[in-house]
Amino acid sequence: MLALLAGLAAQPLLAKELPPPAYQLAAETAGVPAAVLYAVALQESAMRIRGQLRPWPWTLNVAGKPWRFRQRATACQALQRALASTDVRRIDIGLGQINWGYHGQRFASPCAALEPYRNLAVAAQLLREQYQISGDWTLAAGRYHRPAGGAPAARYRAGFTQYLAQIQDAAPLTQPESHR
Image (cartoon, rainbow, N blue to C red; front, side, top):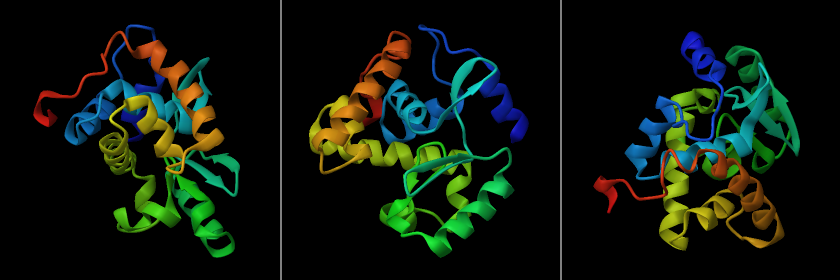
């Protein structure tokens, strides 16, 4: 698994490059454009790896402070400590920074939220749910971050749009055939 993630992270993101296969699979399953899911993951958990920004699976945000860990086990230990000392609504986990307080029921356990494929699947489901409300992928991304909208969602949409612009040509914003 680590080798697969490292291989995905080592590839430079070019303007006309498709999102990595794990993102394509999760997006297709949920009926979300892969470029949208990848742009959200970049917005949520990007870190610089070999000079390129890449989503990082072992990312936590605890009470507004981001933490990135080299290994899943270390991230899991930190997550357990955070859950014991922080309001669960202030803890975001993994590639998609899934909020534990609002969406923890979508995982078997807190550390299961650090499993990259499951985290991406949940992120894609959440995006799809927000798209069904808004009918627009950019608005859905803002609602993904903050369903109530407002200035925080607008700031999020601006960052999301910048990431999306880098990959949009490779994966047009259309609904997959199976979800039309």
